[in-house]
Image 1 (cartoon, rainbow, N blue to C red):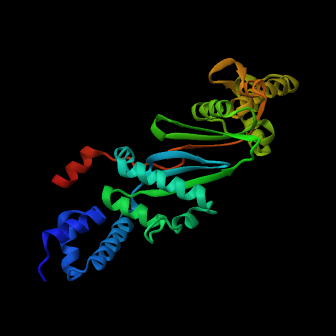
Image 2 (cartoon, rainbow, N blue to C red):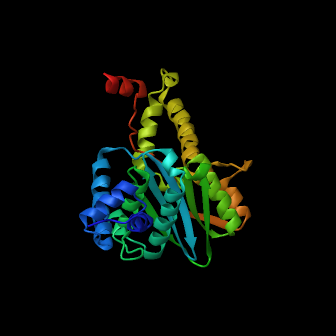
Image 3 (cartoon, rainbow, N blue to C red):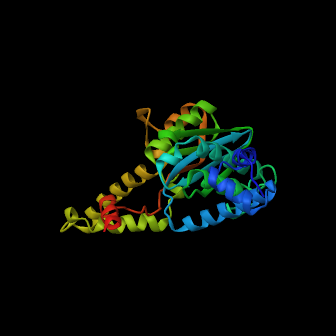
Length: 291
């Protein structure tokens, strides 16, 4: 049957696919709009699956707060160019809003959450993948709940490449945001010394005991010097002992205490941390294609 330009335009408006893809889908569906949409969704899924071997190590992090619940998410793409476009940013907000409202237990549960018009979160991600031409994945998220006596501090740095979410007992939202800003900038690993696993401290002690500058020194002197170094090591990785980024004359613990508060917990996400990025040699790729 003949496919009209109006049908092609309607399908493009509904799916954001290219003109030829829309026309082919309508021809295959004998002009049935809903069937054509289903065909394109199926092709979108196939397209997303084919991109599964690509490394999505760019993207953005984001924090959303709704009352006493907050969510921090990381959404990955293959390039920072796509991570900066409007479709990706809209998807990021949709993902965060859906997750904070539903509080799913893991990524798998999050992907099947209903969004709108019978679509799941995974459907929306696939749709954006189809528009951008890049693999987009929901990598991780955390949903945090607080009491009325606690305050959330939310902060995103460098356009969302790093986000931090802090929970403070007492103090106020402004103080909590300052702490989140510090977390984003300085990257502590734990709130306090008591949270650092014994094996982490033991490993650091072992490393320090083998330091060349300690060779030949008596064991009691070695122990004393290593003890001091362990203390310094803990101060570097624990939030409360770090020098506050906005005022180096006080620690984070002192800053928060001065505001009648205490730090309960925090989450910090940096885009791509722990993902092995695929290194490409553009010149070699071009030469191979020409060859």
